[in-house]
Image (cartoon, rainbow, N blue to C red; front, side):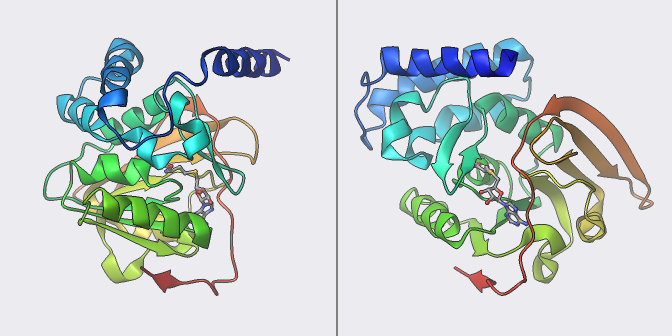
Length: 245
Ligand code: SAH
């Protein structure tokens, strides 16, 4: 399989170059790698929004991955973050952020906090990010990193984001970073007229379509499939783990 071969090559690259940067919170070790990531993986591939590029130049991605993955934090790939979940490839984070056209007065919802990295990038560009994560341990870890880094405009909650976050709706922006088979109606309902949602839609553990859904001023939906992607599935819970942090 081609995917398996690519995986092996990536694994080999990791092993071959591992240990170049030690697990550290010292940003200077990573700043050059981050600048190169923005130029080579994002700008060179067509990300044009300068605010998005600047945000990704600033957010210390290595702080959002486990210590054992820090050396690879600025590589062109997703990385494991525990609990069988992943932090998305930087390009996908940039693409999703650019697609929703963030504005400084926007209120955003993220479903699938994971590491907290996408929330941090978005938080640089909007007024407030509400982010929901179904794995309590990941929610707790992300909330801690975001707090340590001084993001006071991100609220993380452990729980099932399938039903959105009605208490803070409607949202100008909704970013879903786990794939449902169909777009949850509750999320569409919680999108403001004039707002944008980006969501990977499709079968579990397969290729999905990254879909941009905009709601115009009259409440009419417009949808466009942007790119084939591969996300972890959006899971459901019994709703018994709702806890605000
Ligand atoms: N945005 C993340 C990547 C998320 S990976 C980042 O920047 O790191 C997708 C995440 O969605 C996983 O952590 C998974 O646990 C979470 N998830 C899956 N189903 C969910 C649901 N129904 N509600 C909230 N989070 C969910």
